[in-house]
Image (cartoon, rainbow, N blue to C red; front, side, top):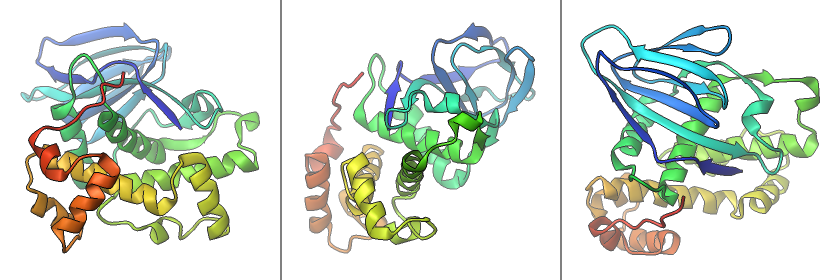
Amino acid sequence: MSLRLARPTIKMDHGQAWSIDKVNPVNDLIVCLSGQGVYRVGDDDERVVLNPGDAMLIPAYTRFRGMRGEGTDRYTGIAQHFAMELFGRGDLLKQLLLKRSVRLPDWGFNGPIVRNYRETAPTGTTTLLQHHQFMIILLAFIETAFIAWQRPEDVPDTQDQLSVQIMLVASRLSADPVGSGVEEALAKLPYNRDYFRRAFKERMGLTPNKFRELKRMEFAASRLGMGLTVKAVAAELGYADPYYFSRMFKRFIGSSPLSYREKPESDGTN
């Protein structure tokens, strides 16, 4: 799956006077962290109200108007412009019928991810870690908002069904790096386990186990970036031996946890 962030994250922080009337040439995912946002979207002028924990997708070239909602709190959150392709099938979102807005699942887990994503987003560039964090948020939205494929001809063939299942397993492993294990993520798949593992590695470049370990190390990187100690992060991930955790972290991230904590690295990807 190919994800491109079209611009740095918009860190929304709007008062009573805020309003917007716009059309973006790319998709826009909006997540509310505090306050309330009220939008009118599309040709039918659909009214959407976003409260904390709610997310809304505005497809590319869709007109939308927004203003701050009721209450005295400032309307804060993120707005991320992006494009995404699923294993060469073109724009995935054009092929899906999705609810306009949903409450993101497991807000106790996803809420801190969205807040950290907003707080650590660089200006003027996008980073590899930012791509990974946004993928977790976006896939959580898609899983919750999915209704059906847009048209009969969009229904995936056998290989595309497999690709979608790989995407969803990758989403589950990304969304819960501390809890869900590989066997739990594969439990209800309609495929032979060995066959699916081979297909997963072919498309993702890593086995499910190594992919999960990568996501655990990326989660560790974000926690270190928030100021947690190496020992605390190791314990959070279930490593009894911080030295073993440090070796695993360096293998996947490329630097030791301590040096990463002191000076987080960025690849400058745009």
